[in-house]
Image 1 (cartoon, rainbow, N blue to C red):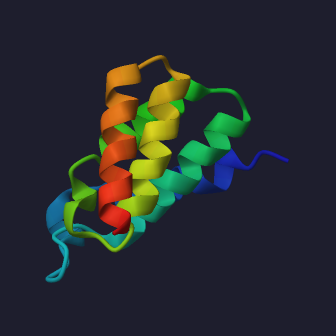
Image 2: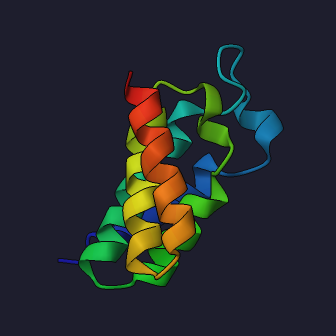
Length: 101
């Protein structure tokens, strides 16, 4: 089963020009963050760690005011650690702990 295939179009759709997805509450479609997390998890399961990291990086900054901030930062930290980006992983883990409070 290719778990990545159904998520790819959803991520592409969710990251189209931001003017299409601007939400009055958060400034970015909340679904894009959730889709990016799920897509990166699918890539990580297929040991495509660098691509998973790039997916999460593509929505970085969008999570700042999102209810998914903790989830995003945790996924980003894990992905950064798996790709050897130790400093980014530490910063993201610390930010995730702060966001969870």
